[in-house]
Length: 420
Image 1 (cartoon, one colour):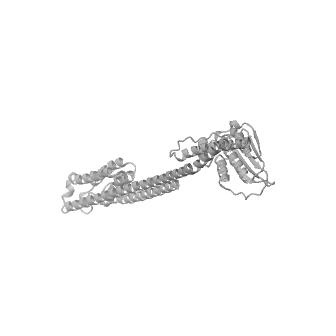
Image 2: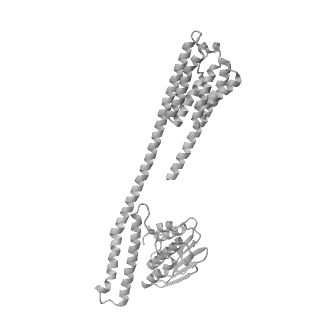
Image 3: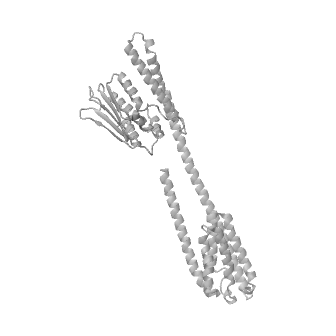
């Protein structure tokens, strides 16, 4: 969601800049097309010189988008030069020293530099242009000799200074407002991110507290009762005592997994030890635990399983563990077979149970099956879980050994976030 929002904002920002640049370019072309004939016809400036001065005066706002200092220098030279190449007779009937196209170019230049590069740099074209326009009557005192010209020149300078100053203030205020708005938007996004992060941490802390206070406590009680059963109940036979010892060992292993998971939930930066120890070599011990519960389990492991990547090793063990747990819960009294076959390209796992002696409730795609499927898909493998023709159930997973984009950390993170 956040990436989509950032991408949309970036695209809209590019669109706005493109439209603004296109409008600025259009204004420059229009001003240039008016400046050249006006300078040539009204002020008797040679046509080639009008083209050069017009390109400098009218093109400066467009150049100021990326090169403001060059644009200011170019505009200052052209703005001073263009009013000098006029005849006295034409000045009396035309605005001088700023013609209308030159005035509008001056306004655009000050606005673009101020809005784009800040008020400090925008003050340079304002001051330079104003001082240059005041110096022009001193350079061409002959222009002010006819009656009424001095008043027209004074009015022209006042209008130019007022319009450009107003443009400078508006551009500075608008740019400041936009910058403040952008900073507020970034601050809101940062606050929302921090709020979601805090909510996530609080939720993880709550889950960790519930697991510690309820589940871990119950498992501790089970472990203690099972460990002390042979001492508290002297009349039990050795077989039952071994069963209690097996229950205590399983409870201790579950408590170890619970502590590891609590460490992950209570570590915000995910720096806790996330790597579990169980791999394919630990599947025989897992099968022995199931056998001690009275379930007939056949095991076959072939191929170079020790050469498989760590992520594949862990995933294979966890899938076998979940599949055996499902078989024990849902297929009471049914025999189970576990086959692990490895080669240079993949590791295959198949856990199959026969038809249960008594009918059980239908299976559904619960959290166990979904977790196994997600684990396999994370590693780029294939997973199937379906009933067999004889009424049993089979879980099959194939995991590739070539994992260029997956490491053990990603898998063990998922592992520690599941129930042991």
